[in-house]
Length: 61
Image (cartoon, rainbow, N blue to C red; front, top):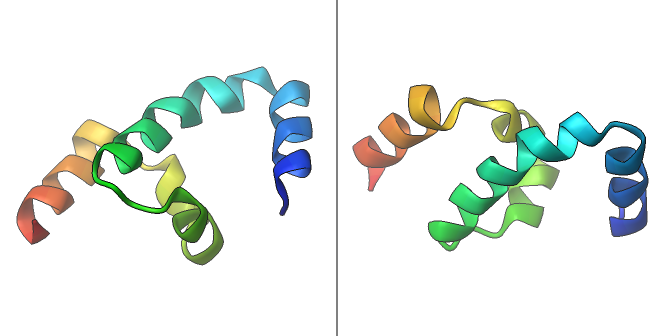
């Protein structure tokens, strides 16, 4: 999926952008390459930040 396809998807489904923006911001705060996360494990972008991502990050970091 290239950048234009992602932009088109978020324009068609604006809630997707609202839900993904905080997760992408969180990954960027960890200096994680979001493109790699999206390519290798796209389901991670749908996980709860507080309920899953932060506890796992705390455990491994």
